[in-house]
Each structure stands twice: as C-alpha cells, then as structure tokens.
Amino acid sequence: MKKNKITALVLCAVLLGTLTACSDNSSDSSSESSNTTVSTASEASETSETSEKEKNTADVLMIADQGIFSAGGTVIQSNGTFDVSNYYMSREGSTSHVDHANVLYQIPADETGAPMVFLHGYGQSRMSWMTTPDGREGWSDMFLKKGHSVFLIDQPRRGEAGQTSVAGTISTEPSDQTWYTQFRIGTYIDGAFTYNENSQFPQGEEVLDQFFRQMTPDTAMDSANGDQGIDNTVVAKAVAAVIDEAYEKTGKNSILVTHSQGGLPGWDTVQYTDHIAAIVAIEPGGAPMVDSEDYKILLEKKIPVAFYYGDYIGMDFADVPAAGMWSMMMSSAYTFEEAFTAAGGDCTVVSLPDEGIYGNDHMMFQDLNNDIIADHIENWITENVK
Image 1 (cartoon, rainbow, N blue to C red):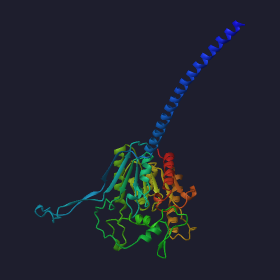
Image 2: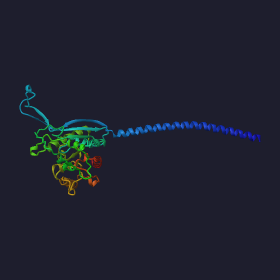
Image 3: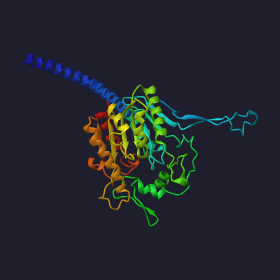
Image 4: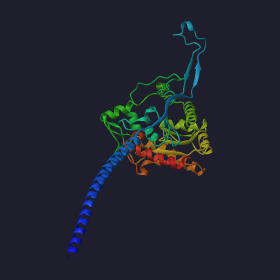
C-alpha cells in the first residue's frame, strides 16, 4: 500500500514536472510563435509596400532616349552675293533650309515592339497624338507603354516645321464650326455646339476651347485661291526621311500611323523608303487607287495595311451632315481591301461599330475610349506585323 502511494506520488511529481516543463516550453513556443507572427506581418507589410511600388512603377513611363530633330527638306538660295556690310538687310546670295519635317521622338526603356511614326491630319500637328482636349493620356504615351518607340511628326510647312519654299497667305477666316461638323463630333445649331448621339468625344466648354486651339495652319496656304498648301510629294519624302532615321536609331522598320489628310502622302511614302513595316491609316482622305504606283509598291514590299473608321458614317445617319462624305471615303478602303487581298496582300478595314465600339468620330484617338481603340490596334499589330 505504501509502495503504491509512493509510486503514485512519484508519478504525480513526474507528471507535474512534465506539465511545468510543457507549460514553460509552451510559453517559449508561444513567445517564439508571437515573434514569428510579428516578423511575418512585417514581411507582409514590406511585400505589400513592394507590390504597391511595383504597381506604381508599372504606371511610370520609363524613357531611355528622347529628343527633337528635323528630317528631309531642301535648301533654297537667292541670286546675287551676300553683302556682309549690310548683313541685317541683305538677302542676296542667302540660303534657307525649308520643307523638312520636325520630329519629337521617345524610346522606352523596355522597347519590345516596332517603332511607330505618327503623321497628323489637316489643321493638326503632333499634339494630336500626345494628349486629349480634356487632358487625358494620348496615343503616344499609350504605345510607349506597350513597348513601341514613337516618332511624332510636324509635317513640312506645319507647326514647328513652318519654314517653306512656297509663299502663302494664311487665312484668318473663322472655321471652327466647319471642321467640328466635318470631323463628325456634332454640329452647330442655334448658337451652340451639339454632340452626336452617344458621342465618345469629351464634352464641356473648356474641352472645346482646348480642342479648337490645337488647330494650326500651313505656312504655304494660299487662302485666296482655296489652296491648303499641302504638297503630298514634299510631305512623303520628309516622312520617309523620318522613317529612315527611326531605323538608324532603333534598328527596326517602322509602323506608319497616318490620319485624315496625312493618309494621302502616307501612301506615297512607300516610294521613298524600304523601312516601313506596316501602315495604319486612321480615317485617311482616301485609299490608293488599285494599280497605282503606291498600290503596286505596297504589294511588292508586302506591307500590311489597316484602315480604321469610327461611327456616324453612312446614309443611316441622316442627322450627321458629314456622314455621306465619309461613306464615300470609306468605300475606297473597301475597294482597296478587296483588290489588295485578292492579289495576295494583307489588308484589314476596321469599322469600329462592327467591333462593338461605338460613338467615335474622326478624332478617335482623343475620344474617351481612345485606350480601347489603341488596344485594338496593338492586337492588329501583334497578329499582322512581323
């Protein structure tokens, strides 16, 4: 009996010691666990901060190289001999560097795609591609973030390339309402600008003020005779020089992106350079005539072509004054596509409404959904440009 009692006491002591030890170990373990938890929380916080920094960094546009240069053009000279003694007034024997393009370029740190050379339309400059009237991001930044270098042109006799070999008389005749209507944004009725139904163009008086102040004339314009001062050959040669310079800077052929009036010299550009990877024509003033020189060269050089058109085109839009005119222009693209594709070429005509993208006008790259259209173009590039 005593033996059993002693045994029981020993067992109790052993158990008590074990429990105490377990309690101590548990306390240590709990402390360690607590420390581990604190450490993990700290690491999680650091990870969260790192993730946020990475996210913010992803939104930051990293530029490896940028600058401004002139390309193409010519030099003219007056007769006679320059009179240095009357240097301020003398013009005899003087030279003038004229008819070139002026180019702002940016090369992203992570350059993965082909360079994109942007040529504006009538009354516009490279500013068209850089921002929107309501201050949002323009296509130049969007495509930089997609890995493309961008080369933004002011065409000869326009914007920062104003030096001209042809004397002009710039018109001061007001025309905001004309271009607003021609661009299919809306029209002007009862003293107010209207917007087409479901328009994607940003609205407001301040927006319109910014939009109209983008307009800039050609220095060779002969307004008295209705001449806009645009020489397609002069522009095409200068654009080709820009494309060749882009090749020198990047080692890659360029995607030429044209708009409206810029579409016409854009086609001619294929005659003066071998470094065009593709042409994306945003509502060009027309397509190359089938069997024209431009058409033949596009086929020969196997240059993929895409046309993009917005909304409010065709006879269905009776309340849009410019709808019929743009319908005729768009039909030239379909004629080109049919012949070009049948001859073995690569051509796509994109009608944005057919893609489920509605409300876009002639200035689609400044509309509220310009990012969606940029993504569509990037997908076309991925699928068609080698």
